[in-house]
Length: 422
Image (tube, rainbow, N blue to C red):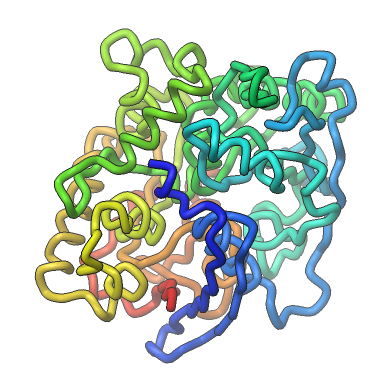
């Protein structure tokens, strides 16, 4: 499964975001040598989000100085960190905590590699990052949360902020759970304890972390506070890949075992399922007590590339073109992907029955739509029933309306910003 991440391979990525009229919108060439295909994807998508925009808000990195005393350190032992932009006015006592995504490491080799990157060491993290989408400070870009205290917690453990172990021989620290706790404690000391509104969000591996930690997050605040969670592109399915195997389950098994994630997973799940199954959101979402919103593309680009049709499951390359560009999928391949969508809709059936929960499942080939400006809230952002993602999330959070938005199957949605890799 080490090949799952294509670690160490130089990848030239051309990412295209399709406009509503089907024409090519943004074109970004990205030469990626330091991290995985997922990392290249996220970096390029982030570049798309703010390319061409004037003066995006750049927010500096804050290291958590007392974290080391608690054993809350990155893979390489460096201090964890976050980026905080203070709220004001009506948002002064409202907090949005965003958990960064970025894949996982599932064995010693991939974790040793990862600790030499920004996903495993604060020594390699950017000193400033742009806040776009749900983190933007502009009302015209982020109508409901622009003046909140907004935090991005950096991801440097490789297990969705859920592990707690170490490997002295390889000089690896698997301390995601401790990083989560140390960050929450530090933010509470900086004013989050006074919050009357709070939202935990995250994308990809951060979206999974949001589901895992949602009820813990709720516990930091008084009962009178409005506290909810948003998982973006975090609904990773325990799916059968194109070879009949379970590529993602194999990966997750390594992550859970190596980083000793089991003890930090909800007992309501581990009491009756194996630990790896309890790392899959489909086995967690119905038992989350805190209001939870699931934002996911029905044809999640990352899951198509790395779970359904990774090169390891497609040695002859039958899925190569389809994996990179949905327009090149054959009729039978589209049928396979429709089966994946049906599985996703089946997984959320019980979850959707609760009035407190929210859904936005659009029929796009995308991944992480809340942190990119073009997909979160823009003139041509994706919609379901004329409602953009930012509006749907805001309506749900502030109880303006119930939101259970499920798109019609591909290819009916012409508002998608589909990701194409070439």
